[in-house]
Amino acid sequence: MSACVRARAHPRPPGNSRLVYKASTSADMADDLDELLDEVESKFCRNVPVTSEICHRGDKSRPPAHAGSKTEDAKGKQSCRKDASTSHDDEDIDDLIEDIFNDDFEPPKFCEDKRKAAKDDTRSSSSLLTSRTCCPVFLGSSAVPLGVGTNTSQRACSQLRCTSCDFRVLTFDDHEWDPSCDYLFFRNNMPDCHRLKAKLVAAQGVRAHACQCSWRSVRSLTDLRREPQLRWVCGKHHT
Image 1 (cartoon, rainbow, N blue to C red):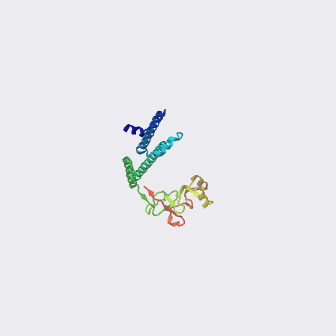
Image 2 (cartoon, rainbow, N blue to C red):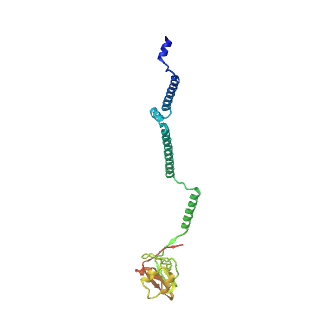
């Protein structure tokens, strides 16, 4: 009885149907195995939908869906790595710049020693040099010696400077200015001594004085306070 039931439950097709039955059974098992593999791949590999994989199997000309997704994932990972490396490099550069600005610059010790020695030399030399000013200020002929003028030592000032044109006063011993001299001549030729000599006339015992705006021919010791139109002052004597 049981054998009959089994036979009825699984009837065999007549004739050559045995081969067809075996082929269909193996095809069904292959399909079941493919579906099982698709489920495993979809769950544990790339979460690729099984339906898309099955659909692509029907059309062999198109690549499977998971191949495209793998390519896209690879591209995404590559771009993410590039972005991460770029951001990491930017952070390193920012940190380096911040360290440069935050760190105090400390010059080498030998540079500090040289600077200190130079300052000490300057102080020592300045302490040795003393400056003196004429009081009163004298103008003199070529017979009057040059130097620091005082009430007791009447010397002609050799450091005269004009407060109007800010030029140093030049002197020429044993010469006087030609009467044809004018303001434009000194304006255009000071302080070129070779050009100024064009208007100098030899005169024994006379000292010619000139800046860019004023000029005088002095024949004797003269107190500058008696010449108010001259804006000449003593520019200090360093001894």
